[in-house]
Length: 90
Image (tube, rainbow, N blue to C red; front, side, top):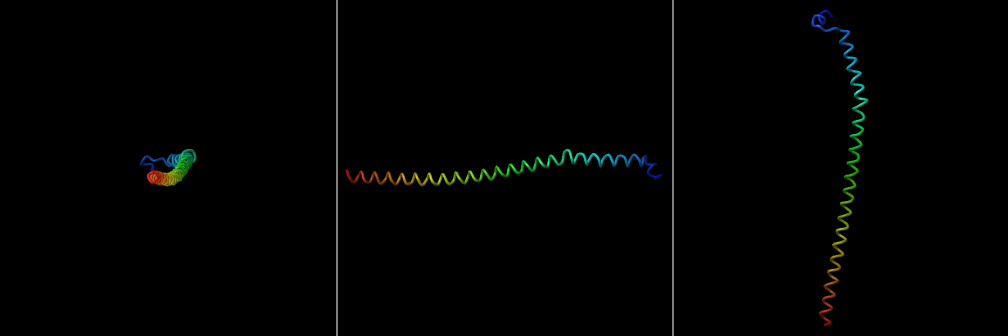
């Protein structure tokens, strides 16, 4: 103990400071860390849901595009047949 006193370290003050730092870290954990982590988890969940919804909409758009292409192809074929009939009849 005398060696610490020679270095200018007061043991009761050091102990009090360590306790204060521990209390500060505990309060920061409760007040800041946990709420921030909860907020980040919520944000991550929302981003994941948004990505899933985007993928679903993309699949719907691809299906709709395929159906539209089939309809256009059928209409084109029908038009060609109508032109061919018209040319044969007259």
